[in-house]
Amino acid sequence: MKRLTFLLAFMLFAFLGMAQEEQAIKWYTFEEATALNKENPKMVIVDVYTDWCGWCKKMDKETFTDAEVISYLNDHFYAVKLDAENNGKKFEFKGEEYTEASMARAMRVSSYPNFVIIDSTMENITQLPGYRKPEAFIKDLKTTIQRFGKD
Image (cartoon, rainbow, N blue to C red):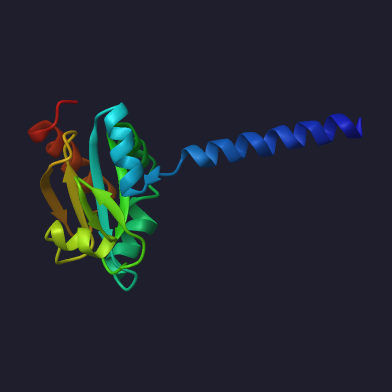
C-alpha cells in the first residue's frame, strides 16, 4: 500500500511539474532562435532589457507570467531575452560578431523595456517600446502579425 501511495504521489508531482513547465515562455538565445527559424520560420521577438530597469522587471513579473501571453508568444514567436548592457559572450548574426549590448545598439534600442520584432527572414520590422499589460501586449503582437506576418 505504501508503494502505491508513493507511486501516486510521484506521478502527481511529475504531472504538476510538467503543467508548470508548460506555463512559461520558452526563452531562446539569439543563436538558438536563428537556428530554429531556419528549420521552422516564424517571427522572433527580442525582449531588450537591463538589470536596473523597473518596468522590465514588472513585465517579467506581470505580463510574461500571464497564461494567454505565454501561449501566444510560444505559438507565434521565438522569444529571446537580450541584456542591453551585457558585453560578455559573443555570437554571430548575419556574418557579424555581436555581444548582447552591441546587438541592442545595432537594433537602435535606446529605452527599456523594448521589444524588437524580427520577421521570419530575420529582418527587423518594428519595435514595441515600453511596459505593456498582458491584454495590450497581446493586442500589439496580433496587430504586428497582421501587418507584417504570414501567420
